[in-house]
Length: 341
Image 1: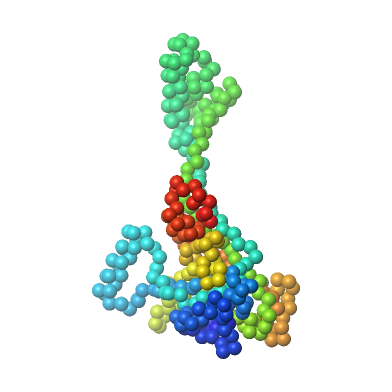
Image 2: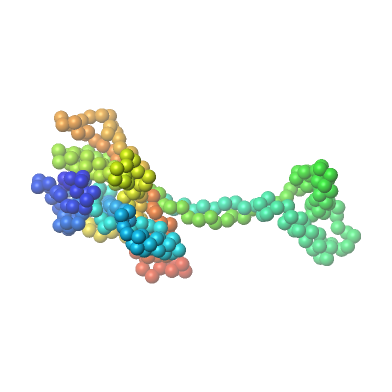
């Protein structure tokens, strides 16, 4: 499938006369609101009915020449988005679609952030002192009778050493290590009382790797335009005011919606992602040693794409289908958990 790169950026369909899409992908060819690039050419046939579909959407910046009243309306809209935590800019519908074969490796990573919190160190020695006093009180009123409390009990050592340390500190002496040393002489150490504190969920990252070995001149052209399209939508736009040499603001790069397809439907057994940004592109024009056709086109090209999702995955999104089609899944549905991807 041959597409003019400019037509992709403008959302106009433009296909070569000597190429057409067959199989389940044929329905895309008739849609005139975006262009389609496909590799290999027989993608979507009965033997190649698993594929990755990249739908490209561009950011729509606000009009810098709008009137004062419109500007006020825009500021109010910005305020509403901030209050409702909706930070996504306005986007176009799909301006281009790229369909590639299913890569050999496909993995999805989910990472959460936890921090270790020491109640002893992070909340201060005061908490430990209170706990030591509480331990003494329990011993005096519980298992041990008054006058029978051992002088080598760690709570007594801690309390006594803390009092001495406080007195020495008032004289400019002592230090934080005095209590620890006093305990160590009797074979004890302060329990750091570690707790694991949840800090949040990271944005999902994933990588897709493709190796192109064109079987025809047309496929070589298609591969070149596919790579050029990813590069184009990876880059930002620079807003340069009239008469200026440079600009102060960027329009960020395009967003990608990635679907793993089986025939003409999304494969519910594979990960489902929301809108993503393309963070890295790596193109190797000689993965097996450089070789080229007579027109200079590489015999083989390796393309590695790294994406990052722009929204945090929550239980609600997973239950709604971001992991798989789990129907009326709830947190108490053990069988439903097994279906999540």
